[in-house]
Amino acid sequence: MAEDTVAGLLDWFEASGGSLDRSSVGFTVFPGCGRGAVALQNIPEGHVLFKIPRNILLSTETSTLPSLVGLDRWREAKMHLGWVGLILCMMWESAQGSNSRWSKYLESLPEMFDTPMFWGDHDLEELKGTSVVEKLGKVEAERDFEDKLLPMVQSRPDIFLPDTIPVYYTLEVYHLMGSRILSRSFDVETDESEDDEAGPSDAADTSLGSAMEVDHPQEDAPAEDSEQTDADNPEEEEREEEEEPSGVSMVPLADMLNARYGADNAKLFYEKDELRMVSTKPIAAGEQIWNTYGDLPNAELLRRYGHVDMLPLPDGDLGNPGDVVEIPADLAVVSVLQTDSVVTKERIDWWLEQGGDDVVVLETDLEIPLALVSLIRLLRLSGDEWENTKAKDKVPKPKIEADILDVVRAVLERRLAEYPSSLDDDRQLLRDETLSLNKKHALVVRIGEKKILRDTLREVQKQIEASKGSGGGNKKRKVVPDGGDTGRASKRR
Ligand SMILES: C[S@@+](CC[C@H](N)C(=O)[O-])C[C@H]1O[C@@H](n2cnc3c(N)ncnc32)[C@H](O)[C@@H]1O
Image (cartoon, rainbow, N blue to C red; front, side, top):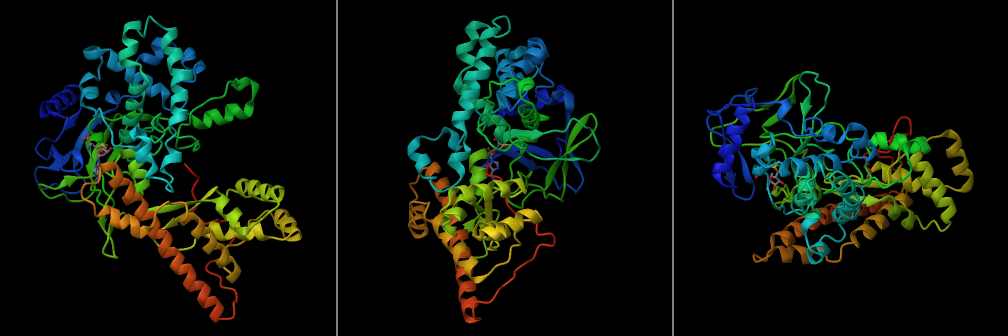
């Protein structure tokens, strides 16, 4: 983005009531990160870098479009669910040109993204085995565009002028706006309690870009495809209420800060009438001012933001200490060799009802997820034991016994086999300096995940050998007091 666009954005920001400490904060381009904020002088902890009045946030609350359409009609068209409403507001504001309050802001936003949403099939193949591809939600996003957004646009030629449709209301622009939301929006609570901390929107990862997100009701706004009315189906009504994202907003200037694992030195705080970006550590003159995106694993950074973190790791490699590997519960089912699908389904349904998740997560600590141990034990119960467990209403304790370790090893081996290439192949490929950015990013994601799997497998193998040496006795790693804690697990999203 040209420097005069940043200058124009800052002038607009201040003219709109924002305040920026220009003696402390500058904006510049950092190689590999795009634009970001820089400390122009030493900044102490707790210093207010800039203040953003709530009325210049761009959201479905501040844009006049929903009231122009009519709030009843807006809801009837389900524009209040997911990100489709905000996307339409952003499209409509863009179509207003300089008449929009946010024209300078919209002009400053990126026009292109390195996120997999925009990759061709060939590059997407490189992500096979990672959870990135299935989380893109491109099909669901495009269904929202066809089923919700376009009918709304076409039904109101008085608001969406027909000659503007091929320019501002296309699928391409829809994806662009969705990706802007995915990578830049914040979840700004409408409740103005002081000192609440705001962060880059986790919920924001629900764009069309990832309305794109499909199955994470609280955080992600899924594509809504039901034709049934709420009145027809109370469950549906309840589900839709859950999916209503609150306060997903574009926050000018706050979205100019980059992030890197463990590097954050500033945060956004809510106040009654404004948001404040405040330093959370002393920042030396010349240093980058970093926000946090939640220290996400590289797979998520790539999907949402189009970059990966590469920091020095204890083993001498470069990578992201926040990397994880997601293991679908299905792999446990296959590995337990439970052949009776009716029995399995009943137990998995019960597991989910008990608060278990359909995915368990391996982390860089190389611990066997307790949830995986509980799940394997549940699947291996005899008929009588299963009846008892149901009666007690508690999932099996995550007790690691020798035969459980064998199943854990089988699960991890199956998961590792989902990647078409080996870790060594990938490391070799990464040495190629002519690699495209997409291929490089995909390799970094794959390598990070495979290392966790390889190293966890080594740990499991050691435990198997130790348990054989000790006569195969029981080994309890941790017993959860109420038997109901299934360890760290995450919904697939
Ligand atoms: C919230 S915006 C930050 C401002 C952005 N750099 C810009 O030029 O407008 C998020 C985007 O910044 C870039 N970014 C942020 N942190 C980064 C990092 N550590 N490495 C590379 N790119 C980063 C990514 O393109 C990401 O989608």
